[in-house]
Length: 479
Ligand code: SF4
Image 1 (cartoon, protein in one colour):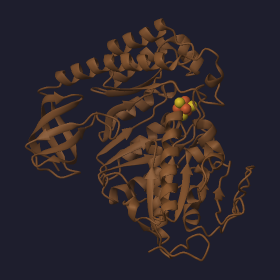
Image 2 (spheres, rainbow, N blue to C red):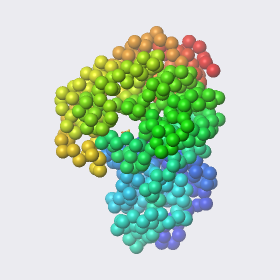
Image 3 (cartoon, helix red, strand yellow):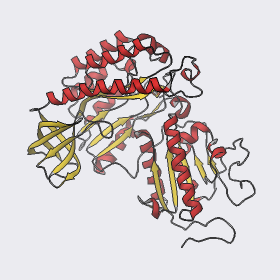
Image 4 (cartoon, helix red, strand yellow):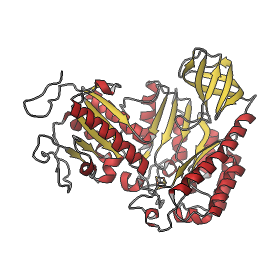
């Protein structure tokens, strides 16, 4: 039974049960985990069961139209539950809040608190609704800060600042990933100016996390059971190159992480091509624990499109770079992402892209339909591509990549691989990943006749594939 004050909003119990819905990318996931850690520290009871929660925190993604639509849907569902009386409070946090600067309140009624990305650590106040901090006023007809809305008994607390703090500290997280792997954010924000991207306006300029803080966090994650750490940031390659000016850049950081006891796999995500140096490639090649894996979003290959995207690299530069990666890192797996339907992309330019991915044979590739975003240079370009054409191109590109991926998997049959067990799939089968498979975004390896536990390393022999995934059998159980 919920406690109600007469004719007024619900009162909060001293230790509310809080559930969190994390939308969007791995960077948002780190924020979600930190928020959960702060809430647990403050005495809230964190629950994975939304139906059991007094308060729901929705950590949103605001990157693309599709992510905003998804966030609105989740928020509306939560508010419907509040109206049913099965939920007391709805807190909306993250990129969408930061991007829309509170505009969300104009189209969705009933949100109790907004928390922007720069105010993440205010989540406890937002959940408890104690309004201890007067937030920034926003010019909306319905709400200013912590005041009542439209004369009723609802209030919306707004924690929203445009000041981008130096990288926030991400220790003491309550992790949502399995114990054996974790994400470690080494930087926040981005100084690149890709014309399609809203991230710099949401997350601000790039700030690196000081090396000592990165190492401390890595050790904490290891002591919490992580054997694999995935390094993330909007642009990890520029680590230490911004205003921060650390005495080590990305290469030095990789070498220091390589010496952290208990850390077995270190994986580098979100590499920006034009900033990737030979020094960084050599660090990846030299460091035993650093996976021979590079996630390098290229977005396109045609010179005109790359220029219009302001990617600071052309086709020949990209090809030379990819060649260098393969030459300097033996057995490297390369993952990329591409955008189809960028404004003005002609059939010919698109066909060049398809031919390129067939020829280069990326180990993994994700593709996105270009999303026309307000307040971006590309969003203002007048040669937008019709949706149907964009969808057709996405289909064609992924069909080409599927052929590549299937052929590469077939070529692996007979290969011996070390895999990290993720979870049990069937009584005698586990889901695992080898070093060339990143969590959440890449294919997996199914290991038959295996009773190892999550977090175990197993040496396997590849015997076939199931769609994009590999099938393998153990040769021996590792550490
Ligand atoms: S590198 Fe480009 S696409 Fe990536 S976050 Fe920065 S501006 Fe956006």
